[in-house]
Length: 435
Image: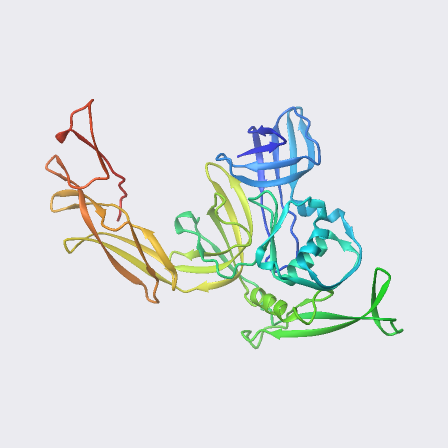
């Protein structure tokens, strides 16, 4: 890993800390940051742009220097924070929206970012209706994300992205990248979610009216509450209601969608913590499927990652709104002339559409040491409840018998001019051990 500030790259770094997070529920607009100690005698100015890269020059974060203090004569401690931090400093005047296109709203809210943001095209037709009081741009952005069902991504990119929450993702964190053993916890039951929505009528308020003012115009405010109860709660569970109140751009048109959105996450009380190898493959906000045991799987949303850096990046991953995922075995049997010469076994989610690259098989059989190559490059299908067993035919590539290597089928054969081999050939072949 290295840090770039301006045009200067700093590779002499230590104590690197990076823990990106996001909120798919919409209750916060997280400020992400990384901190690092840099060996340098350069002066680094607060307000500079600072970027974090891996050794393959992939961008992990592009933030603003908000802290730069000397630890000693040659070590500078630097903290970079995401653009959301800048939004805390912008106070926005009260405004009454009526079918205002989302793009117009965000143009004002994110004005400080000088265009360094993007909005997913799925929000092109979204409008905002309701009242916003005097508030910071950060708070108004959080309100908008809550009401439209979006989350913020300001990691592994060079801008702030506003993205829809992915309800279809099925990325699997492989067992081979999972450190043992994941921890499963259970929160208290949420018995109901409640939302207050608001309507406004322009006019002169009476003494008993609740009213707001924007641009010198007065509006009488009416609040209505709607509730959705959790039907999967034990009778002995204590009452625990999650309420969204005071977000005055929640209106009659979007209140039901917000209720459903809150229920989707709060009614699921399971959370999972696990450590994984994560070289920028898994990110906060994504829905992933993980192994909670060798033959048990769960699906949830990545809320946060806390990285530790070495030869590879290791991350402590926290998942929320977790569902137990029904899984089943996939057994691939490699067969030659009706004889099983190798086998691979996977645990995958039921109804998961898989495509797996077939492996070369190495094994002793009848006094011969064979290398078999698969006749098909991949095997594909859909995992059925109870599991799948599929056969894949293989052919002999190499046959070692009584000290003589017989070449039957290879990827590449070339003449060798420096050393003599039987037949004057060398063999290039990828071999994978299969148990």
